[in-house]
Image (cartoon, rainbow over all chains, first blue to last red; front, side, top):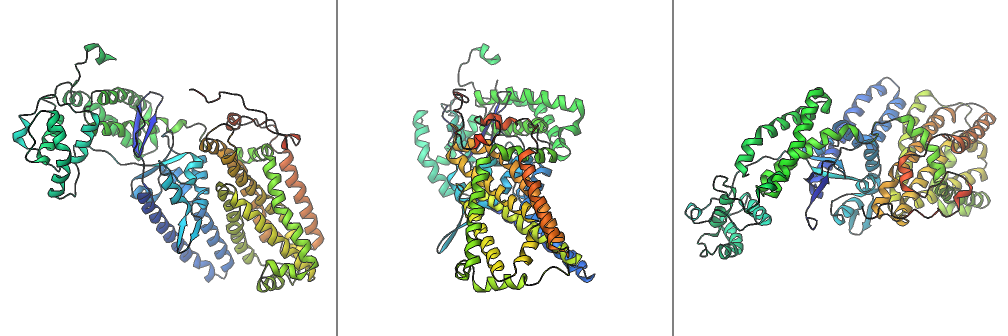
Length: 264
Length: 355
């Protein structure tokens, strides 16, 4: 099969099980990065205030030394510390449900983590293109199909979405009940059709008019394929198709598979 | 088998797997589950594999498939987390493997030396003979500050309080420079090229200028004890950066990214060593270099420092076996000075061909 043109990381396991994870996009990663930046600023301020005690005690040099040491650690080891303690999630990544993994899907180790966070210095290099300033990292991410920045490329890591997936989310489309009985038990739909229907019926934040507009584009094809008259309400028709495909009770195997294949 | 039957039959197992994973994720990983829990988890994971195959083959619904994909991913991570090849951090490994890594890649080290010390020596000599040269590189204000800073000797030493502050500054500033010098090597080596030339030039001009205006002993006695560690560390991180850039160009038959990834650990070894050198340098620079000891003692310390640095680079970790990742890269023979300028032997064919 041709590789999926999608932001999906397919991972092959020793069990010959290929599972898929969603790759995190640049915007989401940027929000996470900003959160981490803010947290670092807060840590910095709290510690600087606490170290003020050295100034009071007349040892302001020691206070300054410790402060700079802290800045150094925050600059270079903040992310590594988080990633090693939490299995690839900094505070910002936790908040946005992201996780750093190796490209084989395993959690990051200290090598990958150190490398990807050292190279961060190159990723935040700014290239002046007056009147704009371009950061190297986001540009590299924009060019890479897996949205990796330079640090990810060197360390062999990918940032993936780490959200619990639940079954049976709310359906935003009401199937047309009258149509449901007219549909045959076995629908001439393949996997990509089902996937598209699935996405369509779960899509929220769309006005009914726009829903109908989109549905009208594809519903004639399905109606023709099923030798049905063009539907009156395209949205309801697609909803009915989806409901039938989901309805397990009346579902019939699409391929008349011989029994032996069941054990293959 | 239809979807409902599969969910009815297997749903409890998936739920149980999810519970086990939740426990493992919230605590210390699979260890928290105990032996029986781990084998239960492994068995559930294997049966999930066949469920997932079935869902895919019979197209039992994208949402179900995603749900099982997610479970499989979490189970895979939980089960294999502990075995990610030799992932436990050993500081000793990093330190001991540093010098051999440097020797294996000596040509980058030598190149970095030339890029750093070359401009340094030339600019130093030029600034020593002609003030106009120093003014062409640094502004009058910068030169004046330098003269101010080093116009006095170190007869009074430096207060402990101030030294503590400077330690922090030297770690922040110098290790930061070295790390940045390495990291920007990913830009086809342009970063280290710039940092090495720039720092070499600046340091040379400052030294030459101060010697010309008669503060020679002040500055040389100050820098002599920590400079072996600090300068070498900057050269080493520059060398690692250059090597990273070169790994993008000369890929040894691998893809660019594959070659880069393959070099990652070897680069990390060198940067780790450089960081250790810089911590030594920061300690010396803050506490020893500005002390009231007579210049002669500091010069001797400096000379001993160079001997120590040279000895570490030449001899440390000689008995260490060649690490697996280096072996996998191929083409890297036993370290020897003669091998530096020789072309690496041609790689064996079909290493990663049609697999």
